[in-house]
Image (cartoon, rainbow, N blue to C red; front, side):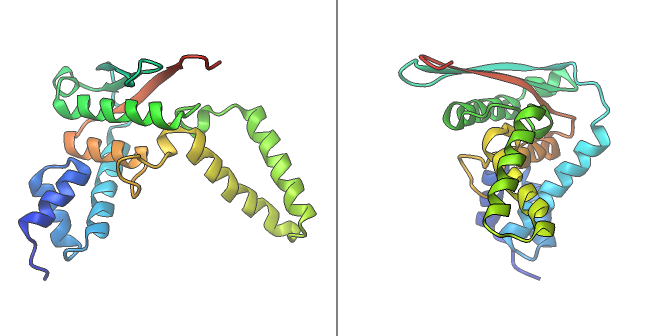
Length: 199
């Protein structure tokens, strides 16, 4: 068994925001492997999220962020089950981090299911045509198109974007970490990004 140091626990806590004991347990379970420990905590968050996904989320916060220079602003609504969790610093910090993500990476949609179907069909058609012209075997084309669509979602959907503060996480991973820590159903309900001169 690996000897787990306080520095490892603090690093994992810093990356996930999850409590010290949960970080220690994940590191012990992963035999000191930081990436495996991260995966363990993500799965725990996903498990809690799945169990609690049907729970009513009628509490939450609205957070605003104005980027220095006052040319870009973001509003986000993050919902949860209880007023107690809504008031925690963890919720506020999560909302603040996600606002900065939105300001920086300009997502157009929250999740893949929100993307305009006509846009996706048009993208699929363009990708298929390019692949067929380049001589790819037809039975591989659909698979390649799905892979390329995943990359498009990772650009335009907030939940699928790589987190700007830690490129090993997506916003979805960050959210699952928060759910694991706070033990409630938490969702990003909606957001809006304003930019001077943008349509």
